[in-house]
Length: 289
Image (cartoon, rainbow, N blue to C red; front, side, top):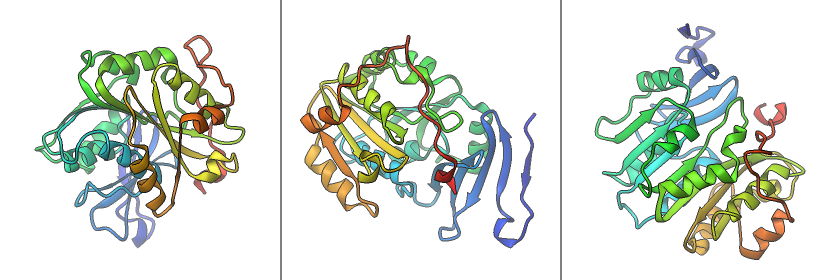
């Protein structure tokens, strides 16, 4: 059984919420600059940031970049059908609900205890049309009707690693089945030098989608440090120019690679299948210091 307690070590930590969940020790840390904003950590690794007063605010770099893909997946404000694989604090589902009212969303989050914690401490807007399934991401995706989703967002980490069965061509076959024509797939990928995992994921996506774009910090793309990269994929051309403009204008600017440059970056990597898939690499301990 998990237990919940308020941390009592000094004024700065008095409001912290600490609870055992299925995936480890969850901590909700209040944002001292925003009255009702919180950061979720699992076993010390930052997972999500949520501002309950302003759910359209995205603090984490990778979530902001996913937000750009979400913004450009359909005309501004148009409701969408969205599937989120990995829930965390439900940051991106809240973002879609705030920026695209009347959207219908499904969140698949395996950690049922985490879902209960987030629902209790960071309650959803009762008007948001968000359904949460507590099951494995691939199993939950399999229950999505054919062609239902305008958007599928994959942001699944277990122990700071993406599980192997969410990195394969067979997994992307399920994504494509669930997507409507013109629908967009966006994935949060994490890797560091020599970028073997990231190159393999680009090759895997290229085997199943005709159009790709990768958004990342230039230092990550050069293999200088561990970090996140956002992969967007579609069966129609992506809005590369606008993605590039938005990524470049972020507080921490990012680069967008696509076309031949992205193919060259993949460097001849082969698509990953279920038979050979492995989890993404664990980040070095220094990443979270």
